[in-house]
Image (cartoon, rainbow, N blue to C red; front, side):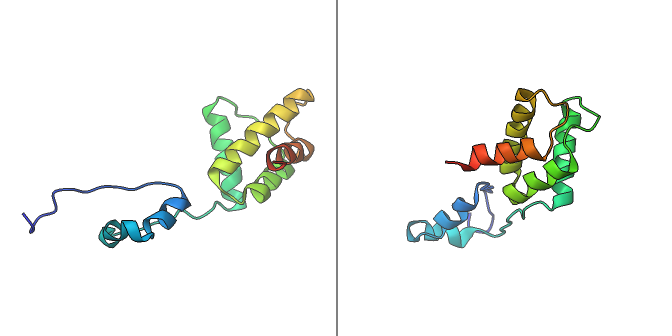
Length: 118
């Protein structure tokens, strides 16, 4: 039985998972991890493409976010996908509340203020 590995498992999680596995109580598990990968943050170009891709999936093909808004979303989110999602949604809400047809830097800044004000 020891000559074959009968079980393979993928552990996928937030960066805190890596920190928890390093705790002493998980030492046996930590020693058995053969491969580790951490997804790096997106670049500014990738963030813009990410937002555009999600808009295309929603059926929107024309420009909805200005370049300034996308740059600000990238800067505030540090390129982390979940933060990009949250900021983009909040910026859309802000622009809709102001009856704007395009999410501009002001809407993105309002979104950033709303999300980071906690």
